[in-house]
Amino acid sequence: MSDERHAKPKRPAPAHATPAKPAETAIHPAEPAAPAAAPREPVKPAEPVKPAELVKPAETVMAAKESAPALPEPAPKAAPPRPTPEPQRAAERGFVVYRAALVSMSESHSAIASDVAEMALEMTEMAHANLKAAGDGLTAFLKARSLVDAVEAQLGFARRSLDAMVGGSTRLGELGLRLAGDATKPILRPFAG
Image (cartoon, rainbow, N blue to C red; front, side):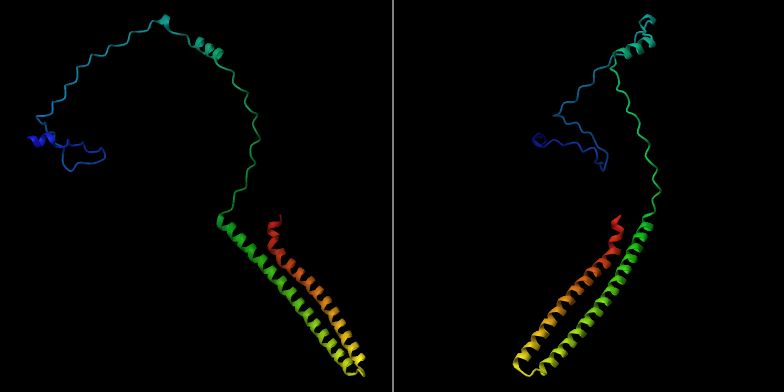
């Protein structure tokens, strides 16, 4: 018996837990029984309302209008939004963008190919002119009868080579800028407007 008094009281199971077997109620002699609920008094019906006490609906509406604050004027309605065309399906739009990208890339590649071919021809012409100038300079150097003639032939070759190099690099620079412009135009065209 002394064990029953010192034992921890059992807690009720949480509402969401389902008991494995039906709960048994046990009354321990040490716990007093809960008192019975007091009997309730019967509910009395409401007293009938006399017609003189009723308020007329028209009077209530008028009183509400007078006591209510004034409502602000409604804002003018804006023009209805323009109907938007029905959007294409995402797959169709993706295909159109993909096709446009392929077309712009092919245009860019053809522009690069033509400009690179032109640069190759220009470089070939420059190399040919440089070899011809070197041959002419060597011929002039071999024909020199004195040291002064040899130095003069060598300086003339150097001057012509320097002029050819400056002219060729200017021409190659122009071709390079045109190549870059022609290569990027098809790619940047969709973003321009």
